Length: 195
Image (cartoon, rainbow, N blue to C red; front, side, top):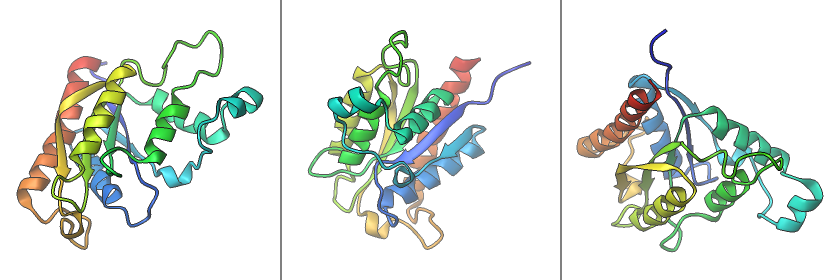
């Protein structure tokens, strides 16, 4: 018996292959694994979606990739998201993903089934001095409003272009510790609450 292993779905709100946020979420995912979670790392580039369109949804239902992502959200206890900041907010691809995954597929499906009762930890990386902090403020508000418990600890890595070594590690020890702590606190929270 005993405790079930926490399951975390990790991804960056970017499709760019050289994305700093992809590097950051990989680092955090490893830390969450080391802390005892089962982590599924996905790349939103592998799940291209049309812009959310109510007419399209009505005519064709959820696109195949939205169904796949939604199934992943439903199968995991928590989200670990590394979110780039575009013009002081979150990326279009992240918002679009969250919007499609929020949609019900049947009339008797509870509202926001993929989000309610989930927990999230947020991190970001940005070339700017604030490290993507303004985007995280928006992401925290969106997730909180759709039923996700967003943990208070977060890290925004500034000057992202010089933050990583060639192995994908974080050069700055303090930053590495902070990101590791966010990942660990997510795992600890889940272990407490999954029982």
